[in-house]
Amino acid sequence: MFYVVALLFVWVSVLAAIMSFSRAKWLPTAGAFARFLLIGLFTISCGATAARHGVHGLGASAYKPVLRRVRRACRRSCVQLRRF
Image (tube, rainbow, N blue to C red; front, side, top):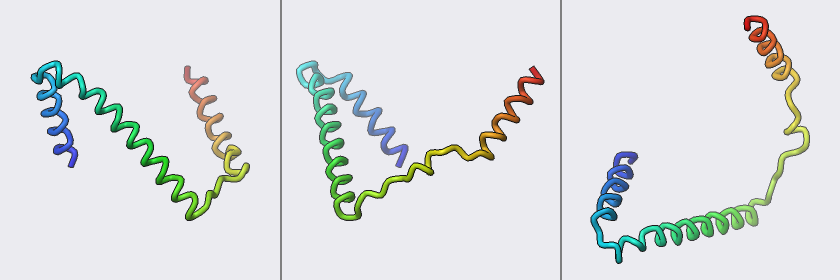
């Protein structure tokens, strides 16, 4: 699938380079419209999923650092400073 997309991108770029300016100038405009369309579809699908299944956020405890990881990071940085 990657190679298909890559080949398509290359050939569209080549065609845009050899097209006349009167037609090729609309390619960036079409890309901008496609971007807005995709952002709109993504927003609508997220809203529909949230309305159907509800929104479940993370609690405050999900954002606190794990003390074990903090200690390990401190030990590693201290060892690296001693070696320096």
